[in-house]
Length: 125
Image (cartoon, rainbow, N blue to C red):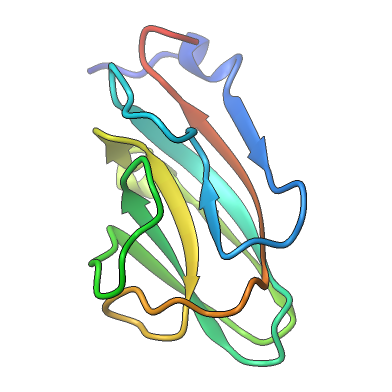
């Protein structure tokens, strides 16, 4: 798929309404045409360092799930991620962003995550 500037005119925006454990960025249903994550800003409200994990899912990950992307985030801090270097991180099922206490696999933590994410769905923007 070739990218054109037109694709980035109207990205979809997800923003947490409150602190959460898992952000269902593209909603709770599988996507018909896949999507591409343009980037996100994550806030860790916890007093402990954690890992922000991105999954190709349409529902919350189960314990031990392997993420597509992992970003270390310090305690009570914010981290921004630009996915352009990852070809706008393509997904098939959906985009889920979660806070985990472990690096390689998902381990649920207390509700301490706030996310703002931008994504596109080819053919729908």
